[in-house]
Image (cartoon, rainbow, N blue to C red; front, side, top):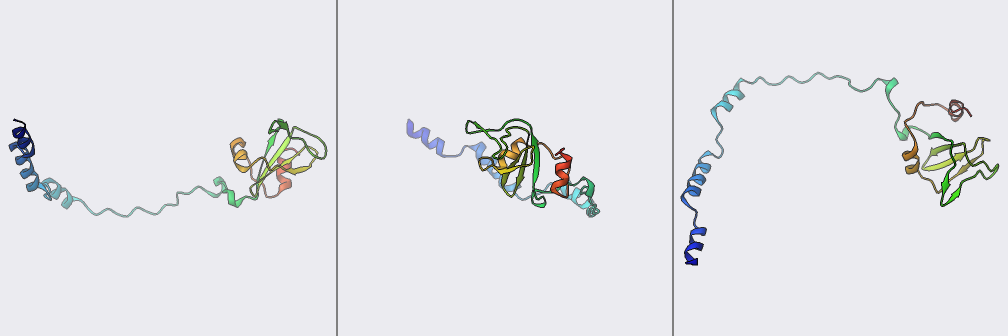
Length: 147
């Protein structure tokens, strides 16, 4: 009995055979409606070249076009459980955080700067907001930030 069931399962039934024959006949054929539509189509005209890039006054410089970026940081900075303080004057809040050449520099309100190796560009990018202005010189940026 089981031999008959296996033999029946191995042999395709009539419906499968007819379906396969119809499939073989239709492979590679295109319906006549498609041929008529292809003939009726006109070749597409090339799209006109349009300068769709932003005007120069709205373009933002990329990171490799900037010498650095800075942001105010009025709060204390805690790293490894200790508050970062200025080595010269002892200030521990009211920083300007400068990101330049893959280094982070902290500048206190008195104007002392120190490199902070425990901070990196990824930290700066996570905490910095969008740039509100671009300046030609470091001093212009300091004036813009009220220093």
